[in-house]
Amino acid sequence: MNDIQGWINLYKTKNITSFKAIRKVKNILNIKKIGHAGTLDPLAQGVLPIAIGKATKLIPYINKDLKKYIFTIKWGSQTSTDDSEGRILFESGNLPNPNEINQKIKNFLGNIKQTPPKVSAVKVNGQRAYKLTRQDKDFKILPKNVFVQNLQVINHDITETSFKIECGKGFYIRSLARDLAIDLKTFGHITSLERVKVGKFDKETSILLDDLIKIVQRHKLINCIKPTISMLDDILAYEILDQKDLEDLSFGRSIKIDEIKLKKSQSKPLDKKLIFLSNKGDIVSIGKLIGNLFKPDKILI
Image 1 (cartoon, rainbow, N blue to C red):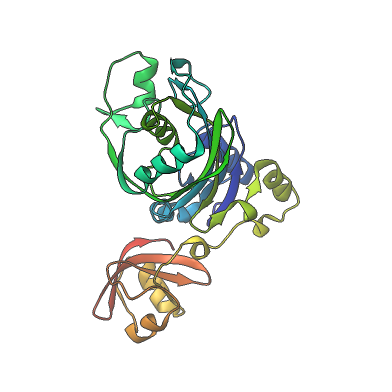
Image 2 (image 1 turned 45 degrees about the horizontal axis):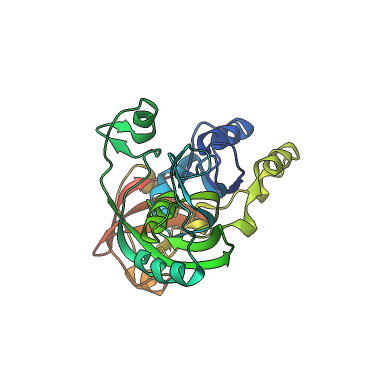
């Protein structure tokens, strides 16, 4: 199956790492090259986009897409991991009410600064933060620029509140729980977290690992592998039909493009900085357009 390329919209369950999930998929499909977009913590569940074969070169473009989560914060205690798996560090009897919460979440919209959790994969002086934490080393993580499109309360109980959020790359829900609670003059941590959407990958069309195994056993794998172009959101794509053009691209050569047809394609306004060339539903190259000459940066043939 090493010639297969495309996407699998996997639904990762709790208590398995993202790495272990894709390793299982790799073994099931017996393929050499596989990757995933947007790591999910073992505690978290939800959509985990998996790239197969040359589609792995497209992962950076999926990671740019907005992600949607549903999560619950338990009020009154902060943990070492900012979720329910860590040890309790601080406690407070202050439990915020819905009005207070709705006022404070306004501070977390738009472009904001956020400090990732100490138990995260962020690198500090070349080492992963979670490894330094395990070694009981004292270190600081610098705040990062992140983006929140939307954040709202969907359910409130006395001791916990559920939210839905739409956010950009590199955003940590666990950090939001920590920071929002502190803003509300209490402490808090995540008790549940589900990713329901990453760009065009959504929960409704995802597949469980167990179901994927059954599909492979029935030789119906084609039903769950999506073409590479189908899951890329808002891209400028041009269909290549000429075999000579495809051959030239496979050797990294530039080819001529009819820019008039390109402008008429069903996509966003013409951006010559990044253009995708496709053939029969699969991306074959990514590059730049100079005049009517396409210069490839990445080849997927």
